[in-house]
Image 1 (cartoon, helix red, strand yellow):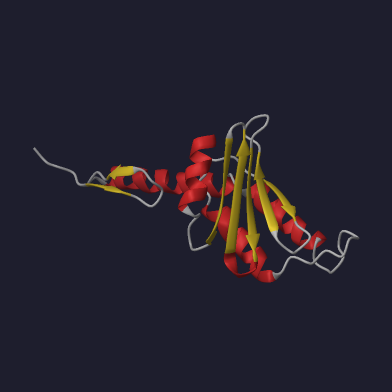
Image 2 (spheres, rainbow, N blue to C red):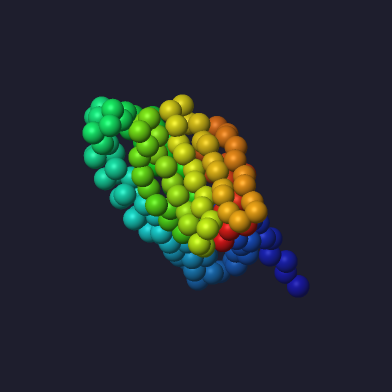
Length: 156
């Protein structure tokens, strides 16, 4: 009997690679399909972010002394969206008056989860719902902060 080694992959699935050429080809196609699904799932939010950057690119863009979205905030917001697992729905994307980007989820009536991306890669999050409030802040690294993922898992 032959044992095939398994390993957890970067997309979160346990893989078992067969040894035949057909098995290796199939494995490569499945991995590529999973990558494509992840990126295609964020096309709308990423497009909304690009549109937002174009609309909020100067001082007073909303007529109320608002600040533009800076390049560092845009890059951090994009990195956040690209790192967000495909299992979660796209957030609504908006700009704040201080140059921040806001991602909002509304999982059910009376429940809202917001993530703000601030200059310097600072992430502030807040979840409000019936009998439940959560808030905090973290620095954005290469992945979505664990507390943000934990709250999204709880909500979805």
